[in-house]
Structure formats: structure tokens, C-alpha cells
Amino acid sequence: MNTTPTPTTPEAPTATAPAPPDRSLCRGPQPLTARLEPWMEELLADDGTCRRLLAEHGSPVNVIDTAPLVRNIGELRAAAAAHGVDFEVYVARKANKAIAVVDAARDAGAGIDVASDDELAQVLERGVDPAKIILTSAVKPPATLRRALDAGVVVSLDNLDELDDLLAETGGEPADVALRLAAQAPGIRPTRFGLPGDEWLEALGAAGGRVRVSGVHFHLHGYAAGDRVTVLGEALAFVDRLREAGHDVRFVDIGGGIPMSYLDDRAEWDAFWAAMRARRDDLRGGAASGQLTWNDEPLGLDGSGVVYPFWQESTRRGWLESVLAGRIGGAGVAEALRDRGLQLRCEPGRSVLDGCGLTLSSVAFRKNRADGVPLVGLHMNRTQMRSTSLDVLMDPILVRSPGAEAGPEVDAYLVGAYCIEDELILRRRLRFPAGVRRDDVVAFPNTAGYLMHIVESASHQIPLAANVVRRGGGFERDLIDGRQFGVQKEQGH
Ligand SMILES: *Cc1c(COP(=O)(O)O)cnc(C)c1O
Image 1 (cartoon, protein in one colour):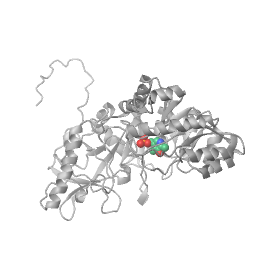
Image 2 (cartoon, rainbow, N blue to C red; image 1 turned 45 degrees about the vertical axis):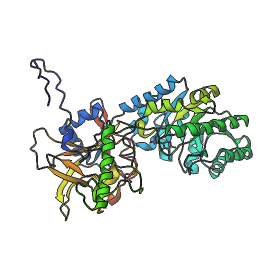
Image 3 (cartoon, rainbow, N blue to C red; image 1 turned 180 degrees about the vertical axis):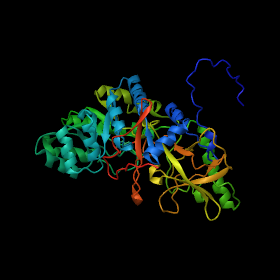
Image 4 (tube, rainbow, N blue to C red; image 1 turned 135 degrees about the horizontal axis):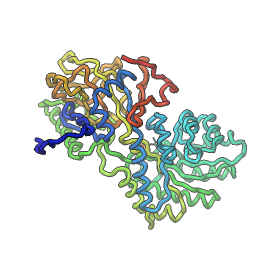
């Protein structure tokens, strides 16, 4: 296929870039090819290093590189700058627990959105400017409110009981808060978070001068730019009323949900769903072959749940530009923000961690289920590579020694360590044209945003996965390991 003539004079010992990983060694029957960062390609091309990381830190091992975080934050800043809008990114801490993420966000001059007491304590300890922290925990223990107040971190208030708790901690001293706005605009899904503007204004009247509202905050379900424009309209009207009531409101925070794409190829994404629908039709008609998912699970096509849109048209910069170009009332969003002298903030998690991580796992066994369905067991469990979405839909990468002998082709499902019949790492059937060897490494791409951490558990007393940070060509253990619940024990093979 490659008709390019091979160069013939390799006299100087050029740094021989290792061949990129062979993506054909593992694909779904309907492939979903993940986009890889150059650092990922480099690591996956080096099977020895992958195996060494697993031997040193156990399986699975999460590998994190924070360089793309800085680039992603820059993309968002560029969108705001193009519209002349004062802007800051507050990275959603909960999307990845590595301390390296905090340090990288801090060094990029970005802020952090924290969702628990430990997250708050940690980012303060890492020297993040308290003015660059917002506390948005869904439930806030009084001790956490105390910690935020002492440090001068703005609290995003959710409800009136929380306001009471805050006032009990301040003892009359005025406290800086943001108010979480529960949008009521038509077409916006009702939210459990925050309160409508009217309720806030009434409560503020009763609280007198004991709270100073410095910001209005919301976080919406889904990824639609149009929904952000709609609710920004509501938020700005709320800001105007707060200012009339004497509050010095300085920012509006649109929360997270900024889209990203895991896949480059829209055609693959469309073809996958077309095949899933065709398979469902075939099953209804009774004539089906070519199973795509475990027990023919519909991955939400029956309305039983959702999968993340792993391919999306508009991401980070383009998405934020379309929010800023949106119109509320007679004015453009950017203009409305500028006219009010408001800073726009956002709290992206997933989309700024795009490209920052992958998860490596070693092969435990190959076998067939009692009815003959081939299985590949991995040294990991299903909480170590998933989100609240029904499944993660990118093909893994099989990393194999260049000299290793191929085995017989097999179509198999990846199963994991929990003693549960449906303990699948991925629900999709995968094709291994050159088989699976016990010394192969299975790599899951782009796991830094939620996938490696958000639902991980230490059930069965299996330790949590180690987190290693790639820095200057080497790898070091992230500081979060060893200081968290369910601590990963030192382990080796
Ligand atoms: C989870 C969350 C975020 C981050 O959302 P992403 O979808 O990862 O961008 C931001 N803000 C709040 C309040 C959240 O709960």
C-alpha cells in the first residue's frame, strides 16, 4: 500500500522514531478509532516501557501527561479573547484526582472548581490562589464551609439551609458567595442544583448585609451551546437585579459540559450507530448474525440510558465562540458581558483533560464462555475505565512486541476482576486479527477525563490503580497515591 520509496542514506544515527502502534491489532467489527496525542503514540510504540510500568506499578496503571491541559485551556481563552471578554477557566477537580492536574492548572494561571473538603484542602495546600478556587460541592459540611471562609474561597451556595449553615459559621462577618442559579427558562431540563433567582433574592433580603454576592453560577446537563446562551440570558437578568439590590457581582460562571471529541472520524461514529440499529432490526426479525455488544445490549437505543457522544462536531474553542456569538434579547452574549463589566468563567472537566491520560492493563487469561463466546480477562476491573455513561466506545490498542508471533484471529469480549457475571471492561465485541497473547498490553486511550477515576472502587479489596505522571521523558508516581482512601499498595508482579 505504501508506495513512497524508502530513503536510502541513513548514515547519521537519526533518532529512530518507533513505529506507531498498530491499530489493526484490535478493533470493533465497527471500528471506533480514538484520537491519540503524540505522547500516547510514543508510549504505545514502546511495548517495553508499557510492560515495565505495569510490572512496577501493577495493573492497570493510569498514565497522565498534563501538557494537553495547558493547550486545551489556551483554546478556550483564545475564544474569549477573540470576543474581548474577560474570562477564566476553573478546571473541575473531580474529573481527575491526580495532583499533577492541580499543579498544571495552577501553573497555567487557571482556577480550580472543587467539589469536596479534601479537594479544597488539597488545592490550597498546592498553593492555588484562593481567588482562583470555587467551592461547588453538591453537599457542603459545615467544616468545609469554614475552611472556604477561612481561606477566602468563594462558595457557590446551593440552597437556603446551606445559607443558614454558612451564616452560622461567619458569625455576622460578611461572606463572599456565588449563587447557584436553577434555570427556569423554557426548554431547560429541571435541575436539582441551585434555586430560582426569586427565591435567592427573597432570602438575601432576610440575610441583610451578611452575604455579598460576587458571582452567579450555573451548571447544565448536556452540551448544547444554545442552552448556555438561554441560561446566560436568565443569569444576566439575575445579575442586574442583584446589582440593584446593592451586590457587587463580578462574574458569571457557566459551569462545565464543554464538548470534546474522542474520535476524529464522524463517518465511523455514524456507521457504528447505523450498524447497531440494523442489528436491532435483525434481532426483531429473528435473523441475526454479527453480534456487536455483549448479549446484544442496545447501549441506550432502547432508552435505557445514555452514552457519551464520543464524536462531537463542535468542541472547546468553536463551541465557546458559538456561545459568545449567541444572542440574548437584543444583544450578543459577548457584548452583554462586556457592557456589564462581568468576567465569564467556566468549569470544564472532561474537555480540558482531553489528551491527558491513558490506562494500561495486562492480559490475565484467554478462554471461552460455556457457550463458546471468547473472553479475554484483564488484570483490572470495570470501575477502572468507565464513567456514568453506559459504555466507553473507543477501540482499545493492543500493544505487542514487534517480534512476537501472531496467534489465531479471535473476536472476544474483555472481562475483568469483579466476581460478577456481567463484569465487562467494554460492552463491545472486539476483533483481534492476530489473536491475543498473554504478554500483550491492552491500552485504553484518553481516559484522564473521568474515565480513570470517577467511579473507581476498591471492591473485593483490590487496590486502586496507581497513577503515574509522564514528565521530561520519565515517569513518577502522582502524589495522590498514598494519601487517599483505598490506598494503592506497593505491588509488583
Ligand atoms: C461536574 C461539574 C463540572 C465539570 O463538568 P464537565 O462535563 O466535566 O465539563 C463543572 N461544574 C460543576 C458544578 C460540576 O458538577
